[in-house]
Amino acid sequence: MNALQIKQFKLIKTEITRFMMMYKFALNELETKVEILQEEFQLLHDYNPIEHTKSRLKSPESIWNKLKRKQGGLSFDGIREHVKDIAGLRITCSFLSDIYRIRDMLEAQSDLKIVEVKDYIQHPKPNGYQSLHLIVEVPVYMSDGKEFACVEIQIRTIAMDFWASLEHKIYYKYNETVPAQLLRELKEAADAAAALDRQMERLHNEIQSIREEQEDGEANELTRIMINNQQFSLPEALFGLLGDGRQEKD
Image (cartoon, rainbow, N blue to C red; front, top):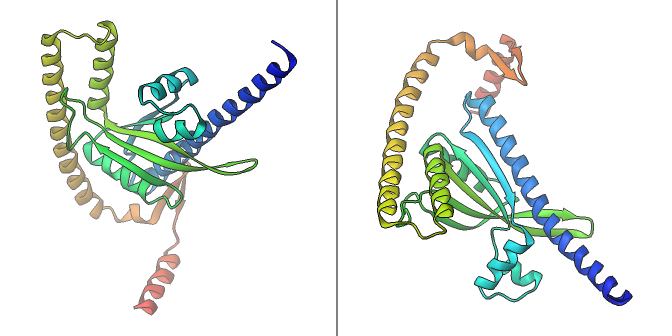
C-alpha cells in the first residue's frame, strides 16, 4: 500500500467513524430523554412505566449486509435512506398501556420527529411477534453543524420481550430452519403471552382504582413532596397563595 492509498484509507476510516459516532450520539440523546421521562413520571405519579432499556449499534459489517439486501447504493446517503435501524433502543414495560404512554411522551418532545410507526401489537406478525416499533429522527449537534440520525425504538412488555428472546434463540439454534411443530408452539406461546398481558392490564387498572380511592383519604400526603430521595414539607401559606392566584385568573 503506497502513501496515497494510506492517506485515502485514513480519510475513509475517519468518515466512517464520524458517521457511526453520529448514531451513537443520537442514541445517547434519546437514552437521556427516556431517563428524564422515567424520573419525572416517578416523582409526579409514584410510578415508573419503564422496567428497563437496552441499546445497540449495528456494526459496519451488518450495515453493509443489510444495504446489499435492500440493493441500496454504497454511500452515506444510501445508508441513511435504506438502513433505519443502525441505532436501536428497546424499552421494556410492565403493562400494555405503558407502551402507548411512552409513545405519547416521545411524540410530545418537540425536537424529536417520529417518521415511521409499525404497531405489531394491534397487528401481530404471523409468527405471533408483538411490539411497537418507532423510527425517530434525532437531532445531533456535531462540531461542524447539526445532523439528523434515525433511531429505531422497540417498545414491548416483559412477556413480549421474553417471547421474542426465546424465538430468537430457537431460530439461531436451528439456523432459521425451525420445525413446523416448534413454529406452532411458538405461536401458541405468543397467544398465551398476549392473554397474560391483557389480564395483567386489567389487574393493574383495578389496583390503580383502589389506590386512588385510598389517596383521596390521605390529606397529609398532599403537603409533602419527595425529590432525589429528599422529602420537603409544603407550607400552608403557599397553598393559600396558589389559591388566590387561581381565583384571580378565574
